[in-house]
Image (cartoon, rainbow, N blue to C red; front, side, top):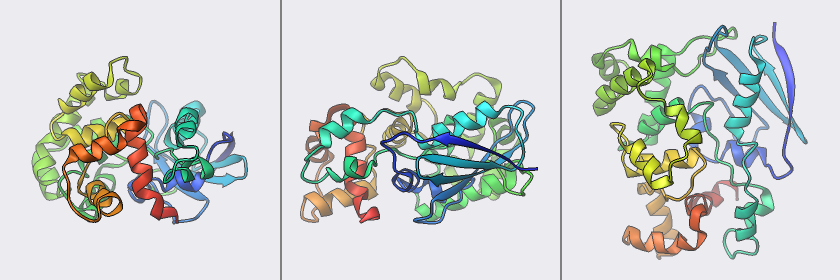
Length: 293
């Protein structure tokens, strides 16, 4: 039988601007239709709980959550949803910085700025590696294949993102042939083995005391994670010091701020330097405003 509970929303929160803040909502185990007030997500099994599918619906100042079954650990699911939607993030200083800004005042006006993320760092890390050096279509295909082939199934038939243990049980050839991961194939296997064995605790990055440059070095020690991937993941960890420049962000900046002409990354960095520790979030909001126009 299904199980329901509610979560209170913070005042400075927009469901649409959070869920549709970037492409994660278009990757399984997320399901979301543009402009709708609901999304689905499947939590991977943990402890004595099997995979659990969650329907999250926005109702004014609260969320209604319907689970595929009653979990033994409700707090894990509740805190997981808070984590996914960044409900406990404090953006007040970012909003103050943007108040009256020529281009970015829309962000505090609509309560945007929260970037959707997965329920754990492991999933965000693998998905980020799936975004490097390829089209979004290929990213979607790889993530779909991972979930389809290795994800545990919830009672409603939907599948969760695979655990490190599930991914470590495969071979490099599996990732090449079934997942179509290409050069990432040995990286996935090595990373999964390190995490599954306890050698690498990626979840600890979320609460690390390291300064951002040092944490970035740690992230880049993972094969397949370069500057872009590390800075993108840092944003999902709540650190916005880096711009996470890729071809899409660069192209958007050229069109918006440089008359369509290519320029060096240093010019982009100078443009957003005034936002300090928030510059990575500032450029993301700047380049995605048209998604909500």
